[in-house]
Image 1 (tube, rainbow, N blue to C red):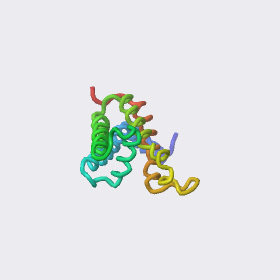
Image 2 (tube, helix red, strand yellow; image 1 turned 90 degrees about the vertical axis):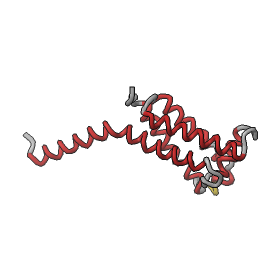
Image 3 (cartoon, one colour; image 1 turned 45 degrees about the vertical axis):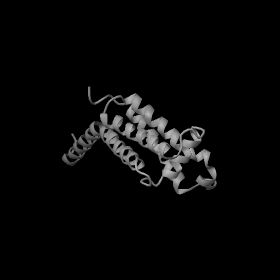
Image 4 (spheres, rainbow, N blue to C red; image 1 turned 120 degrees about the vertical axis):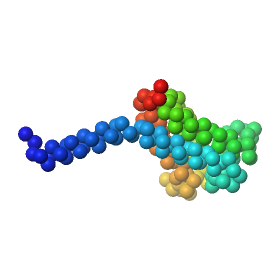
Length: 153
């Protein structure tokens, strides 16, 4: 028989584990949804995002100059707001994961498109590159979301 203090500790651990299992994916979706919404809304306004220049140049490079300037910025904004809405809908785990991975790949392209700005030496990432590299967490979150079931039916 377990001693009472071990039994209480195990009970607490079980409750915390159960809570984490129940709340983890919704909290992940809410957190990512808020970040995507926030960053997307900032891009709606000229000068609103510190990444504006990089976003405009990246979209222009990826579209071979077809989309550039304000249209590139607003397109990125609308894309991020759309991803936020999908995240916050608590529906469609696999399409949500695909959107997150696709977006993470696209926003990572400056690491290759503008290497002189992103790297000052081997493994010496600029501030912008470090910001981009954090999207590895988004890819991990996408995998977790893909493993979930829709919360709303």
